[in-house]
Length: 386
Image (cartoon, rainbow, N blue to C red; front, top):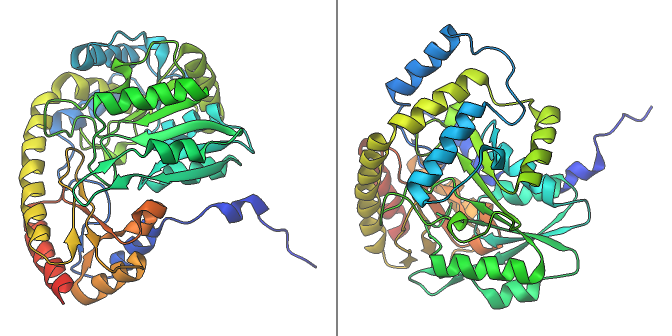
């Protein structure tokens, strides 16, 4: 008797190469973990206390699919404060993490058989979610001049087809640390308007920006009628990775449809977590500023260590908390990451995990404490020099 098989379409979903390295690291003692994108800082106590208070206050029941009106209003106020952008709560959807926001956003834009342009290197989840819904990701590498990255609009034009429906980019970038300038954002917006595409901006790292309190947002440039979606999360800026709380900003019609999809995916984000998110927005700015100062110090230390190694090219990040050094002559970054881990107990993410534009590089998360970064970078640089 033949066994009943899994859905054949799942064969197109590629497992995370970051997780593959992480699983090896988890089985080893004493590893310096630079592969995941999270800080070693705990969630601030006032956010944890807000969760407990929300439970005591009875926020343990269902909320609206779109999220608590009070949190959506608080986010609208925050956009007005940070970006000078006027949003209505009806243009904001609360989600159970940034990745869930990415899921509903992509599903609202794509049907099976459609195509999505993805600027790469990029966090792999966007690519795989496109595949999950039966569409085709078309990854378009950034141009790299040895010092920095830029959008290759000639390559974007060449990648278009009659089935293209979406363009996805991340700024500040995971894994590059690249931040789109307003001029680049305007060019991306004009490109999507011209070709009638949805523009999906992952702005999860916007508060981790070294030139100011917040990175430029595409929402400053687009009209409320533009086919633009912005994915966001509490995870990085508020040290809430395990809380799984995010949001999506877009046109009213898309948010309304995405809220309906929420019912069939997760119903809504945990209600008491949403209340804690309100407190994070209200009280978190001082902690964010202190964290960004610390991250800048970490970045400078790691950047200087890498630039001292012959055969390594690395762009200085403008935001987020990653370095993406390119290693001259490296053709198999996954094997390199495993060899580095086994030889030095330092785990990094292989560049190939971030799309075809990432091979030949590794991603280093410099958010952990200096007690981790100092020995890890010493071992990594010694390994590279050999």
